[in-house]
Length: 360
Image 1: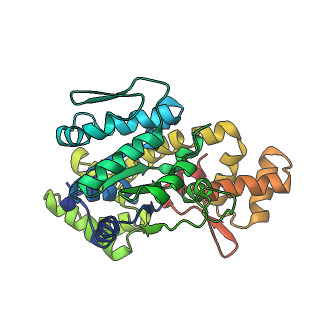
Image 2: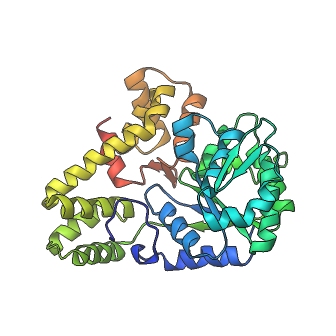
């Protein structure tokens, strides 16, 4: 179903991502060792990744790092190791073929189709080395970290160092990292820092963009035609104008209309309600860290777009704020992808979240 609100797994469920899908698969086939899949939230990065992994002939493992961090409040080496093994467990062909190599890893137990960490001696590097050996037999092993910026919370485990070692030495592994918080992902990877492990390493970047208005209209028409749900061109135009080419919101709008049999205005209200819940969940940690984030987002959503105007709004609401502290808070929101800076002005790139932030 084109309007399914869940991450897609099949090519026929994707809309207008053939170019990016082909580029991603060709990069893996070419033997690229580090691929970055970048873009705003709700543009379909996870769906594109799922489809690519399903269509590639190589064995693959996917770890949702944000989900892992949210559930366990940690991404230390035991947690990520457990997630990597969990991504293989139960997959008969993968486990049976890789078993010989995995049994050599200290701290890893192989029992039937189950893989477990059984010792504090476990090493992610040793696990990757074993997968690299298996990759020589299988042609390649693809390891995907969805929302990889959360690997920066590894504590004593330096995932940038582990990635650098793997890229330099493990030629049969390809790593795909997705990131919605692009600035934070690049802060973690530090490609331009001479003191960082990944300095100067080559990475193949694939950026997803929002749909243009014509594609948004076509997407909505095809989705409604698929389910024979009647809508007017005026309603489609209204949705395109308000949702501005963000596939996740367009899909949610269509899904709500079809499944709940709602009219245009009611469906738009439901999209906004869902967006409030999603944003509240995503931003709760940020707001707990500093209430100033809430008012910065509200100021920008209310069209205070220049640095001074946003700072003055914040000072009016919460009292004077140090310029350097304010700049740091604003930059954090840019790195997290909630704010964009264009030509000296700041804006909320997601129109639905902009509406939510106006009501903060």
